[in-house]
Length: 202
Image (cartoon, rainbow, N blue to C red; front, top):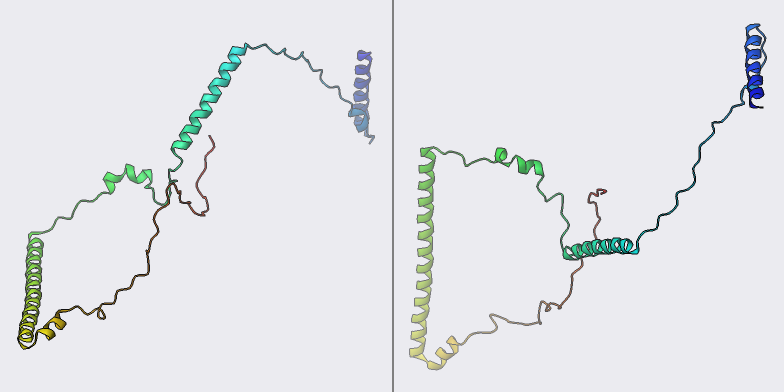
């Protein structure tokens, strides 16, 4: 049966070649579309092997320990801040930090002497300013002391009134505490932000 089908197909192909050689325009495409598919070798499904319950229990135990270890690692780093790419120094710069580092410039002797003289002049100026300020305070306090002594000689009541502090010159008002005490066990929120960190698939 199979041999006779092959012979018919071979005859059709020969007839088509013969017709094309004679110059006749006859379409035999419908006949040529017959194809024989390859036969596939199938095999029966593999039988499931019976696994020892202890092996299954050991696998489940290892999987559970692995998950618990990951949970402990996450709890340990729960409050760890996320790295910011803009703040972190790139590794390329850290590798080339010796090439990028510059030492202090070498100054000439004239520049060093000029800076030393300028430092001394500035020190003398600030010392004179401090002495003048202290002397002015001493003059004001001695003048105040002499005025109070003269006032005490004139009238003791006026002297007592003069040495009393004037509360109207320095008003003091209290509106309450400006900061509340911290709440125990309160975890402040991180706030709203857009996570643009890079993610890599393991």
